Length: 428
Image 1 (tube, rainbow, N blue to C red):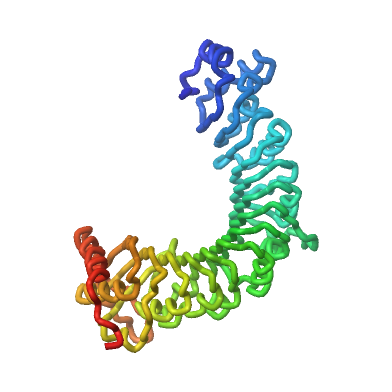
Image 2: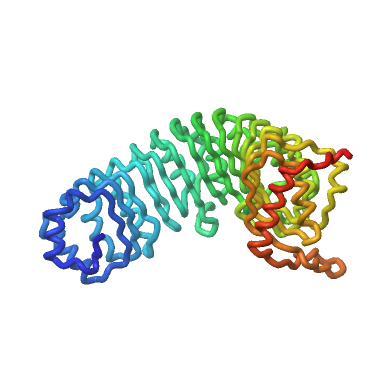
């Protein structure tokens, strides 16, 4: 590993002459001391302004530009053999478009690019060989449309920043972007202009879609039409703020992996039939994740399992949060739910439950999922008391304590023990 702060002129010269042709990957973390940068500038002049010619085999680099003094290193790092470049951090955002223009000119064969550009628009149209792009910050509709010129683009990740996008100055675009090679699209959007353009895109090979939009309700019809055109869609992540009636309209017959983070759901108490639409809307789903990545603020009772599972009879992996306010085995007889034999993996991201209900709930899970071999509980809480709201107020969150690791292991162990035991039928 090279420490650029300790590289004297003699060491640099020795390195460039004897070892630079062996470099395959280089990571540079700025800021460097000004003396080091002055030395690099001097060396750049000594070697004819092209230190990069000495590192002719460099395939990948990870750059972090944080100040104006970093630009001399462009001469050191950019070269025709570069395939992967990251610009994840900076201080002077004026540098980012300049660096992108230099990369286009000096490293035209880049196939993977990571860029953070919070308040500067970036034109990526010149990267004809680009396969993977991760962009955080402003991206205008015209920038997104220009990406369709990257005909080999396979993976596109865009995170739009809400407080930076100058949507009032963006002109409407009627063109339809076509991404012939794209198979993974992950976007977090705030502006309606960008959302509209994404939903009009033609993506015949798309297999994975992750769509996040929390600041408002999106155009459900446009979204549905978009991903119903994705005939090969297999993996879907939707993190939205929608009522379940709207979510139910967005089904897809091919999706096998489904994750739903729905803030509208998490903002209130759940109903027992909260997720009974998932099976009919996604009949081929094999892996289902509900609510991961956000903490439930309200109750999510065990009854949602009883309504969800009968309609998801091909489900193999399930991950969710459960907050159990009360439970007895006699409660489940009214549902008459058959066990889900296909499920082999169960992950409870959060389980909040009173101590008196823990054992019977383990029995219920064992009866419901008799073939689960992988059972995990991430956060295991004991509900202590529920804070009563003032008159006309909002229900408070229950006070709770974290169960010990020993208590968690006992719960998981009892689950497997009850699986092996001959359990009484819930019909009795």
